Image (tube, rainbow, N blue to C red; front, side, top):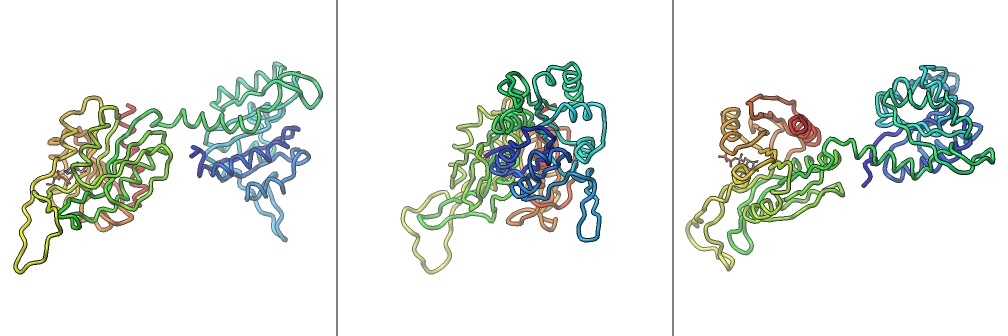
Length: 403
Ligand code: CTP
């Protein structure tokens, strides 16, 4: 899956012959699952039509500050467009636009949008070789990069003038790969290996029955998806659940019992950087598993239970460089119990759910958490969807791991 999936890309097109290639560029972004909006300089419409671009991007294309609709003039809000984007790309970027961008000139919608954008801005110059080699262009390129904008260099080859040399806009495929690679390189969890446990465990009583719990796995899967989308390589060890992992860099291992989860976790823990144990592991299992289905009989049935291995505590004992995160589901004396668990299991962070909070805990789509760190700092969060809670948890981990 591309890092650009579900990302909002604002494409700014200026008046160079390479503008005809932006049709392919839009298609490539859309194919990767990105959302695309286009702003054009008025003169660029001589090189490619707004209709082509609005059809391919499935969004209206703007080139002036106002759009006439029936009798009304609608303001095309450059601030909104600039803030909408996760990434802005100006391609082709002519010498004229580059110079204006470098000097804060703002005489069309594209330039006003550029000045309003807070996201990373990429630009792909395209012009004839002498224009490209001119000191004023070099100065614009340097100045724009010093502002933090990201240059996708022009390439060498045959130019529209018939001359050979440097000034061709990078090919659409190369522009997309450049941005994907750059985005990947800057992800905060790039290169990090993260182990996540999720879901319940089932402890067999006989071949058809088990002791289990109501954990849905939603919280652990949400954490795995967020971590992967921020560049991590995730090993997701999950008990029985119908949740689906959404990311190619999630390696899922399915287990059933606490013992199987314990084995799978210890197999990979050594090479991990971070471990987040969100599974609702059974604390007890039947001491003996009947080999045949237990027949109904008069009177009560006693099943002797014995403790399972505490996976989190066992990692706390062997951890070296790893950042270890546990969960605590409490019903009373929550903060004190969570703090004690953090110390007892040698954790770096504990995520507390209180069953007293409405909408928190098992089988819901929402959760309300408090995070406690090793210094016993306490961070309270509002009730949120589990996806947003996962983002909060990962943010707090990144703050401490990347310190
Ligand atoms: N956990 C684990 N292995 C177990 C039991 C729990 O790895 N056998 C982990 C859970 O994944 C969670 C944390 O330990 O991250 C806390 O689990 P919880 O059941 O709240 O705590 P316990 O230590 O079991 O204590 P208690 O049930 O007494 O509150």
